[in-house]
Amino acid sequence: MTTRNFRFTYWIFSIVSVLALAGSILLAIRTGTDKRLPFFLADAKLYTEYFFFGAPVGIQLAAALQICFLLLCSSAVLIIIFFTFQKTVSAEVYLIALWAFLVDAEALRLVMLIISQRSTSIGPLVSLTRVVYGARFTGLISLFISGLYAVGIGHERPQTGYLLAILFGAMIAMLIPISIDRFQSSFMLAAGYRDITMIVTISLIVINFIDYVVAARLKEDSSYVFAGIGLTIAAGSWVWLWNTRPLTGGIGIALLFAAGLFGVIERLHKIYIWK
Image 1 (cartoon, rainbow, N blue to C red):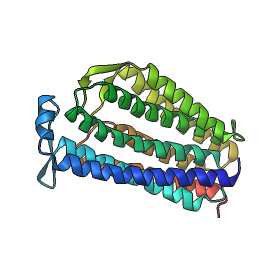
Image 2: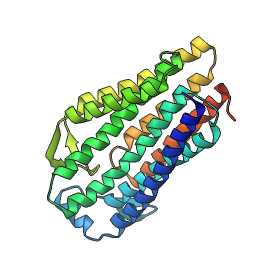
Image 3: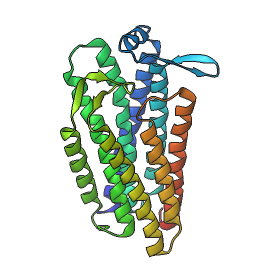
């Protein structure tokens, strides 16, 4: 795969991510100014208030701001990858970019909140819930494959990693049961096998870290260890923000997500030649 194809992929990811960020900001304004949303969430027994520097903030605005910060961080990382990895054909970076791009799917949670308020049809909510779960599983699998590439397995075909991640992510999302009568604080419908899903999620993140540690030993470069630590921090922060958190803590976790990914990019620059 040529560097031109890598750059084109990064360019597409960056553009779409910025558009998703702009859309999430508009949705945040929409949810923050809709005075009927608190009553809707109260009827669903989901409404709560957090405090931000002493000011009360409803759960809908807290979630919207956390999602906006998360998308801001992912967009910034993708733009940095696009401008700094212009001549690098790193399979690890390629897979990490896919994951950072899929983080943008969290913005669909705000779309589901608006749909659930405006419509009684459950079909769109089920479909969008599967899309978000598909993006999450695809992102986790892409991280897992990036760890395999770091070790040296399948390094010559990074596009195969994309196809496998998308295939297995979509398959899991289609098979997972969705409850049609359990609206959650994440503004998504509840998915089945929650405990199993979380075990698999944590396992994939841990295995990815172990792969980067093994890569450091095999290639005698400690930068892989620091890259693994950064990915673990970023992935853990992302998983923590799958549900709405208190506003101050949620923004802090989003910034931790960004710090972890920025650390990964900085360390991978020490390994690969760029520009």
